[in-house]
Amino acid sequence: GDSVTQMEGPVTLSEEAFLTINCTYTATGYPSLFWYVQYPGEGLQLLLKATKADDKGSNKGFEATYRKETTSFHLEKGSVQVSDSAVYFCALSTANQAGTALIFGKGTTLSVSS
Amino acid sequence: NAGVTQTPKFQVLKTGQSMTLQCAQDMNHNSMYWYRQDPGMGLRLIYYSASEGTTDKGEVPNGYNVSRLNKREFSLRLESAAPSQTSVYFCASSEAGIPFNEQFFGPGTRLTVL
Image (cartoon, each protein chain N blue to C red):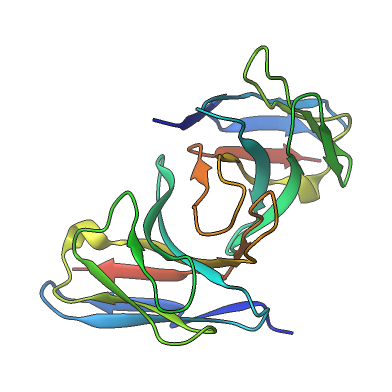
């Protein structure tokens, strides 16, 4: 079945360091790919998304490119801030209509210190 | 515009007790979902409702029931709580017909079963 694998954390960085969180997927069909972020004590928020191969999603300085050839959607940010400390989830959907749930990776905890 | 709301925020139950988790959304979304989040497991789908009047099982439905009361509300019921159901429960909603199934999450209910 469809699945998402993301690097295990925790990832600990100093402020202004470069961030990469790896995500690979297995899916039939043509999935849409997402990164969600969960700040402490809150629900998940959509960070960015990409719906087809070679699309780049970006938001708040974060970027991820949909790579069909390597089945990957790695999250990157050039300079992290303390406020980026959160849990990051990679997810996919193979449906083109609502009613089919997302499939999530296990999450990667990012901790940024000043 | 409150988005997705969940009640209660915290709950402690004894084994065998029952309770209902409430979820409501004010975005006029057709689809609603219940997930559970456990450490190191990511989010796993319990049940979902593609549209008012329909419900379907997800990955981990055992021990739960759901009711789509109307378009706004989707409740999750534990008939006889077990310690294995200790988790954080998230409700989510999405709009039908969009191509990439973006979901909006509530703040979660933290449930402990003793």
